[in-house]
Length: 376
Image 1 (cartoon, rainbow, N blue to C red):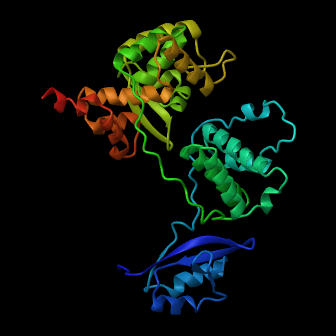
Image 2: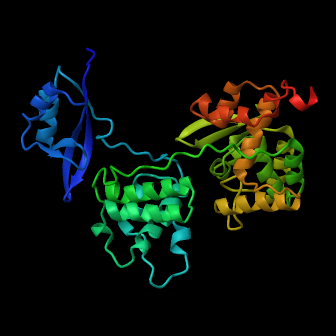
Image 3: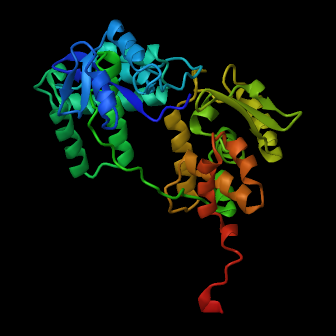
């Protein structure tokens, strides 16, 4: 059955009490049915009807609108956005931090919920740092007493400080996580608008520049790190989670098991990189992970970033080079050599070719057929 009307269920928090919000286009017939619900009220703030959040009321909504309107609960029923990665929850960076006076630390309940939801360690660090910035902005106030106006004021201050859109989005996510997930107060930030996403083109190196970066590494381990990031198009976290058996030399493929979104994929193994890896393996004898710290633990993300940036600096490259720049360069160079966009999508692990299409904006081959008007 196809419905011409639909009602969207929303979580609302009014005076610290949970309610079910009912959002729909103005319709007399629907309003008559809505008013049949027990204890229904109208909110000028949220511009929708609402009723107490309990099982009986939820059942009543579905019963009353059965056969009349489609009840859309996609915003109401909680879903985790965590990546569910198979990695150990690591708070060493948090526990080993230098103690700061007059500084509020992240609540234990926040950390416990992040662990329970299996958020990646990178996300955990971003959320914790952002949330601590927020609670220390209101150092003299109890975080549970803050309202939407306080949150808006904080975000306005971030804009005044010229923080990036991505930083502000992480701040919003970290604050939402506390009120909605830790404290169980869904849609606390219902009316908070997010900044428009920035559409920046990826930074890309030329093939010669990539070779210079690889040649300017300090040792065989660092050489393998940089070579793999580029030649396999790996994310930093994917590189760190590689284990020796993920290198399939018989098929010249790399098995990426802990990719973004808890996905697996195969990507390319370079013959030149394989030679370096064999030399590296004999010298370093990694036990668990392909790249390990001196204490045989997992290599750190900061170390990888430092290896890349310092090698790029020694190579005389003025651009800010990060591990992700090498991944961007891998994709762009494949596109320039004529590789189909669909294959590049698979190698990068993108859900959609729309994500991969950004490389058409920076690939030199996209403009080769265009004659410059000054040269005509």
